[in-house]
Length: 432
Image 1 (cartoon, rainbow, N blue to C red):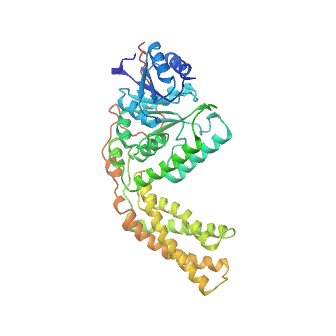
Image 2 (cartoon, one colour):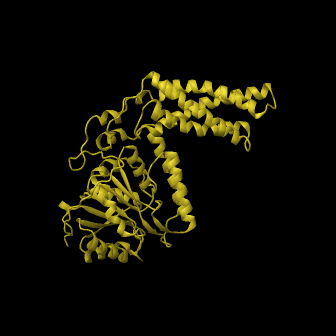
Image 3 (tube, helix red, strand yellow):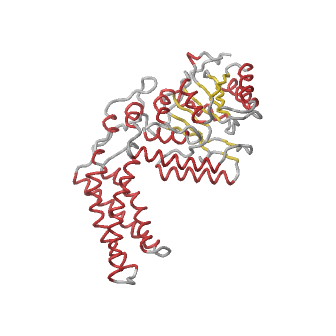
């Protein structure tokens, strides 16, 4: 058993009815840690209310191998298990591995190194990196890539692989984030990462070698459906301000080094005009392309929707000088509301054109829609300035950035995003 007062790593292995492979997986993991990891560690088996011989096997392995403990939970759920075990662990860094050890264990040291050094807040393995080597069926590959693509497009996240069962988090970060995570099942990973990124925490990614377990009992379709529901719930809660991410950002977030002052009114007008010209040009091109295969109204709606998302992002960043992820989802929701008004204006003008001049050619439609879109753009500026970004002209991220933050060891918490620090780990013998 490890000396928990100086425990560096707690490697948690959630299990449910894994009697066929549990002993061999734990033995393999224990041997690797003993030979390759110098920092102090512990293996915690989190049994999720198994109904087969898994609990007995976990206890037997814990009795046989030093540094292995077994925890038995009365209810199922991977997220529930990680909340319980991570929340009670004294370790400096909390790790989570899939029981089947699909991820090559050689990725474990680079996974935890930036957390032990204080450089990063969370770390995840990614199967979608260029140098990752993955062996799995086409169906799972398609679902995984589609899910992560949808996640990046709808939630505006930067991490690449939400569901790889190979993650780590600093204990102080877990103490702040775990109470905010509602999901107790498979969506737990994704929700944790979304909240972490929205709170300005640094997520370190490493490409991994990963071999699919053909005997996995995961219901892919049901998991995908539950994940979509979770994305809708989290996105809605963030947009409505129900999750106190600003306080987490102020306490742990990575703040900008020298946040510039937001532009003045004249600067906003000039920048908004530039963004508007580019958006109008993009809208015109999209409409001409889409109206070939769609009706005029549908083409107008699709072209407006696509340019609205990009327009809101550009105005948030360049016109009104709002930086950082806090509030990003809420601003997009508000931007879509403004888009709805613009769509009503342009659709109304198109309906009037068709009523007064049936059979008008596409170029005439485009001329009318462009004029209506310019009017909608002026209204959009007023709404963005007076409503969407009014409370964000000097966001909490900027105010907090003026106060130097301290990292895990009293050093500045924020390092340049593109910096490459030299990580030096102080070896401590694993107490057997």
